[in-house]
Image (cartoon, rainbow, N blue to C red; front, top):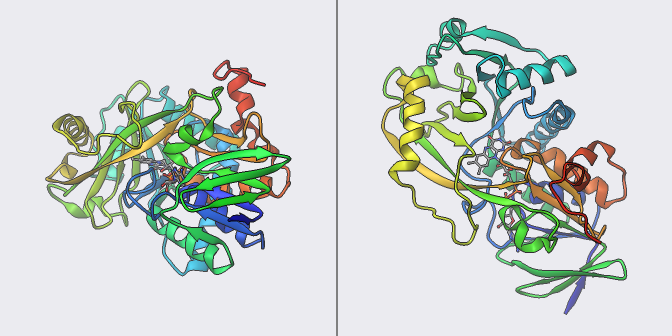
Length: 384
Ligand SMILES: Cc1cc2nc3c(=O)[nH]c(=O)nc-3n(C[C@H](O)[C@H](O)[C@H](O)COP(=O)(O)OP(=O)(O)OC[C@H]3O[C@@H](n4cnc5c(N)ncnc54)[C@H](O)[C@@H]3O)c2cc1C
């Protein structure tokens, strides 16, 4: 049987759940599918915490989008009556000329954002859990903090369903095609017809994309939780900021204070290429050792017993920026989920923007995240 709707959302993780919510609350008929039952631990949106920060070192162009996301996360907290965000402040630690400190400063200056510059001694005096070599310093921003990724997905899905979205879990999209301006979607349980399709499949995007012009690389990532070895109160989110540390040029390690499950620490990127269906989910000594050493160096009292580790997936574009926008040959299909390991914080605002685009509302602010950027920089080939 062929079911007709207005917009289909394939994948209901961070981006898909937000997209579904923003469409449904405008009264748009929408059906969302997920291959599993989100929130789950097999994609890119698990692990109890995601960092949100405003002075975006990656590029100042992200700042307005993250500012909108902050507003929408607060709105989601109100609507769902759940605490989803904890403000902790954030330290970007590294050499002054490194990508982290210099990049965050550039964003802060360009957008007039509140911040401080701290020397290594000042970091330690203010946040005694951190021990930073004297040749490094930090950019401190007060608005940074922690989002609850599983809670955000759950809240978006519940609220979307409450205003009429049709949520289908354990129902993978198998294929899609476009004909006469309509999109036909085949799942394991049926066939559906819609005006628009939003592909929000995260690490499974390459399998659904059918667009040879875009090269996406899925990357295995491992996060670890440690019990502080001593002075646990130094690592409480009430007093301890999130931190990103550029421990070598362009190599970043990050830290999240202990919200009850231990401090979380991981390396940003540097993971092996992976396929979401066959990725190595077990964790070995190599995965643990480097993170432990970094923790011992920069937060020595935090580096106690390892409680657990978990694998997760990044979906990377060639330049590390987002890929959000229409499919190269089918404007009815929007590609949403290639956020190169830093997308969660934006999900609320991306969901709203994708809902706008699906409804024909122009979003020129999203143009820098479209294929044209990759095309100009020679990262994608022109097709069709
Ligand atoms: C370890 C780790 C740490 C991170 N830390 C941060 C951070 O601190 N701050 C930050 O902003 N970002 C962070 N990120 C990045 C961020 O979490 C991701 O960019 C974001 O969660 C990706 O969301 P998504 O919706 O694209 O993917 P997902 O949330 O994985 O959603 C994709 C969904 O699509 C479903 N799906 C797949 N194929 C199909 C199909 N054929 N049919 C139907 N459904 C399908 C999957 O089951 C899944 O639920 C981190 C990522 C990782 C892995």
